[in-house]
Image (cartoon, rainbow, N blue to C red):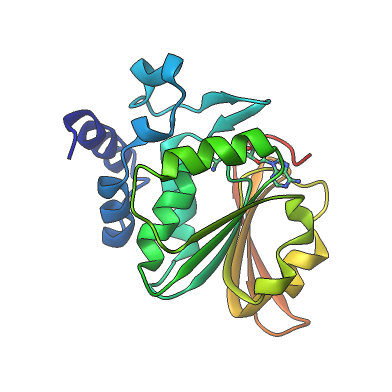
Length: 204
Ligand code: SAH
């Protein structure tokens, strides 16, 4: 693995944001420089969000690590990602579910979906599907999902996400400067947990 990527991982571990061995392994297989625009490549290994154009940023790696630790992804699972952006989180999710799992990712801005597609081509994933569209509607054809993760903040949690979540599934989304974790106990019963001090871009 690239020495600077290893350094970034060490920094995240020191901040106590990265403890789960499977998440750690996914970060060691995914080099952040592959998901950063040319002009910002000298900053790829800094633990900060980086602009990817179209008012979007690729999230801070330690925030992504925290989200992935909360999401508790298992191999073979079916995941829905809202807001593909650079494809960095998409790649990490694809590593976590492994070849028997699937990652479906929706991006609003077609140019960003193409950016993510080019970035992901550097890897040999066979378990990722990308599409352009409004993530608020989810991806009904592929539902239910074991996990749903959004990288942009909604004013209201779209009902489609809760509906498309499988039984015992976990939904993670930014909400009101918090990271909100919702666990589906039954079609009508959802358990919530909130983590403060996170800031994300708004959903379009
Ligand atoms: N995890 C991504 C973060 C991208 S930022 C990364 O690390 O690169 C959030 C993304 O959500 C942006 O690319 C933005 O264009 C996208 N987005 C905003 N509103 C959306 C919507 N309604 N549906 C799908 N994607 C949306």
